[in-house]
Image 1: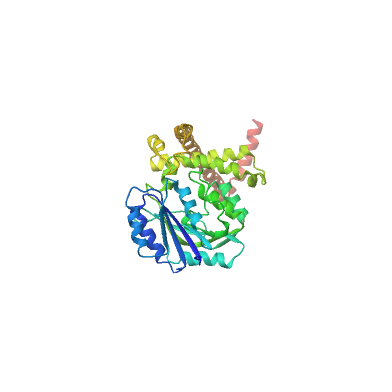
Image 2 (image 1 turned 120 degrees about the vertical axis):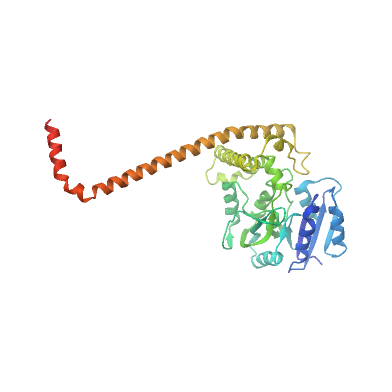
Length: 361
């Protein structure tokens, strides 16, 4: 008999966090699940950790890929084996809240027009400490799938959520993640699923999303791979924006602005340097990373210096403008106060006489 939920957990050298992630699955209040763990040729003791849990719980299915597939390829390997009515992607360094499966599946069970359910997530660091993260909605939301796609294309972001935050129907899994994408493979997959139905977004988090130096998110941002994905996704889904009247040129301008701001943030706040950019390699994408991509990423980074300079000039101009506006407001207030004063009204006749004398002269 098929399980209610298939949890897809790709792993590569995740020993530091893997046991904690698996434990968060095994304590779920919803117990009718299979946990599919595909190891992508780890060189740490990940497989020993997984094997120890396989011996304890028959719901865990574990294998090692014959060759490196990368993150999205490994997800797809899990999806091919998934037999559940619902699919729950997961990550080896994230954590599920104890009621995650029950809450997410209940939404799909009760809303046949919903193809994807997601939620807010708590952000944690390498040691599990709470860190600040974006909050998108403070109340549950029911959103039209097409409108969600357009909203994310306009903002050039993924506020729908990372894999650990979502669940969808097994009948909608299709061909899985696009393995040619580096960073935004998840939101592109959500777009395809949302083309079949709507989204419910839960305001109470179902997972804790971990940020650390070795995470796929960190590597992809440092390597500037997100920049190339933005243009690829924009081209693939341009028909949504064409309906709103946006041209290819206008999208390119928005994309460049988004990329420039993100790069400036990485350089200013995370001390990103060129050697880090060149060294960053998304797991499993060795066959896609070509020399021209390296040249492009180096050029993007080198352009950041000019972008940063322009942003500084813009900030200085804005500050100067705000300062002068403040001076004008203070002067206007002083004039109003003077014109409404008793002394100003009392001296009105004298000013009239002086004006007439001045005219005669």
